[in-house]
Length: 140
Image 1 (cartoon, helix red, strand yellow):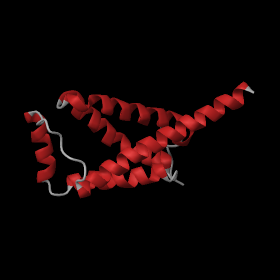
Image 2 (cartoon, rainbow, N blue to C red):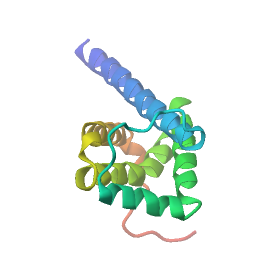
Image 3 (cartoon, helix red, strand yellow):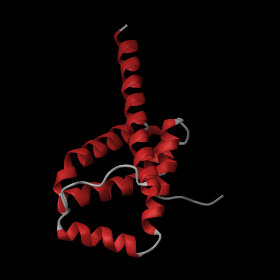
Image 4 (spheres, helix red, strand yellow):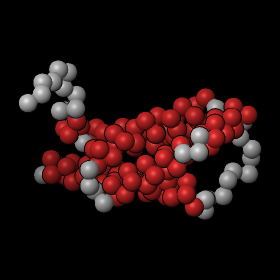
């Protein structure tokens, strides 16, 4: 009986984590296109502004990241290609964490939560990554 309860609670925790991460990235990705979340009232540090400015100056990078977030968020929400969505989001989350660690500290708690959700879900879906982690591969 204990094993069934443990498996059931693990499934619920994984479902909640997947939906939370999916919603966060779907909404934030949409915000990259529609700008419906108001900007922070407190100005960002100079280094953070320089980084954001450099991304804006490319003319494409912010839209690419926002589109990636929307697509990966949708995949997590509809429970399709979840391991792929997690792989796609990993560098985005790593950059969010680094940004808040080194440039703008006020968002660090959310960055840590995102990182924790990503790591938990990657662990929950770990069996799907075994083939990606093959050290030596042959074609055909």
